[in-house]
View 1: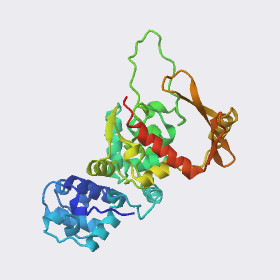
View 2: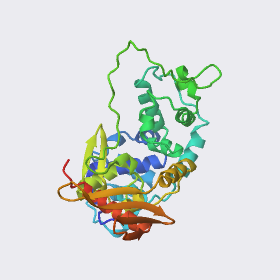
View 3: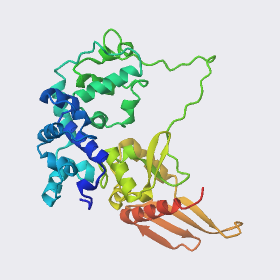
View 4: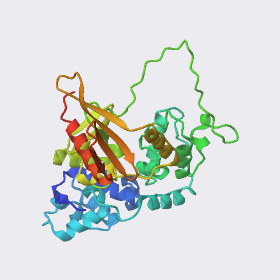
Length: 357
């Protein structure tokens, strides 16, 4: 899949973000590139025209500085330059990456796990400790989202690691830094290196204010967090790129509890189809759905305008490989396959967003 957008048409801050993501994908940070090349001002190249810094960045990415910063060199943009940039920054255009993220991350992990980080300046208290850990990971060229992707957990788990104990993520972070998790979080591990469970009991005499927790809200239709759409078919591989595309193409976007959300109806058709397509169920979820079906069909009563007596009822049930919709009392039925159900579901979700709250 490609887009009609050309690289020079993106705002400079979006292009600069794409350049940094491309560098990180190669295990290079702006600070490490500055140290290796001896060129100062590389971190400021996104806002200022520094030819020496631009040349070092382009050299590290294997392209010309004229391709990365066309507005600074009066370049006549061509299809060849566009192809080079699309290959270098596929996330900017919603294209699939050339190298699987998991494989690249595994190679990084294997390389850095044998090189211990200097923990002499590691803060002992949160949130300063988590800030230091994230900075150390970036210095080693790790894309933070790749850690949680590697474990198959949400990106927010890393942001909450200062308060929430997650042993698998703590071990992975420590391995990325070439140390043991108890060296970073000594209060979370015993002398043998085993995790200490966080005490769950609370003193009844201590009054705690209720905390707002982010959850999906369906009262105004279906809105999905941008962070959970990263990398899906039709979407870019970076939150910043997705939000930029949403702004340019007029997608509905809002913020709740500090989380950016997109309306389901605004998503590209390719993304909608993917989200509504059937997935392989685990044994526990399959059992729950089987029990739900065995309890009988779902009945939807359609009342008259007066609302007194139902005129007809729709019964929805699963029969073999189809969804069976039966009108009662007429007995008329419709058998829908997976694709037809997905189309109907998408139409209902789109229409629900037009219902006043």
